Structure formats: C-alpha cells, structure tokens
Amino acid sequence: MKQLNIPRALVVSAIVGTVLLIINQHETLLGQAELRIVPALLTYCVPFVVFIVGQLSRQDDEN
Image (cartoon, rainbow, N blue to C red; front, side, top):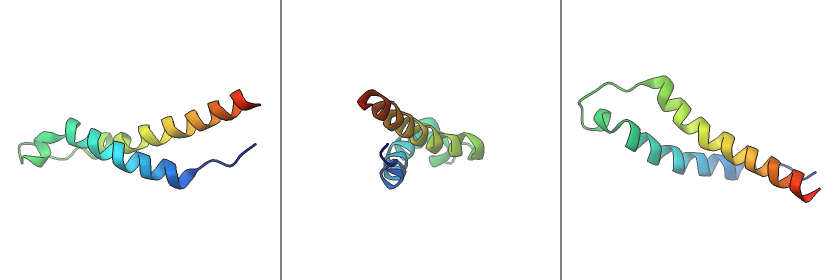
C-alpha cells in the first residue's frame, strides 16, 4: 500500500477551496455580507477529502 500524498492534497484543497470560496461567498468580498466561518472551512475540507478518497480508491483498483 502506497502512502497518501498529503502535501499534494493540501495544495489541491488550497487552490480548489479558494476558487469555491470566492464563488460561494462573493458577497463577503464585496462587503455585502459577513464571512460564514463554518461553510468557509468546509469549502476547503471537501476538496481535501475528495482528493484523499480518490487516492484510496485508486490504490484499491491497483491491488
């Protein structure tokens, strides 16, 4: 079993999470709403989890 590539997962979640955050909370950037902390954190967690699950799924397919 190969090790998970956590650093790469963090980079992907930072990039994808930032794009999703801008899309989902653009009102905050325009000063029209307050930042919603929990949804903002989840916006970064989702791409991280998807990346890790994808790696695990790929490892299962290779075995």
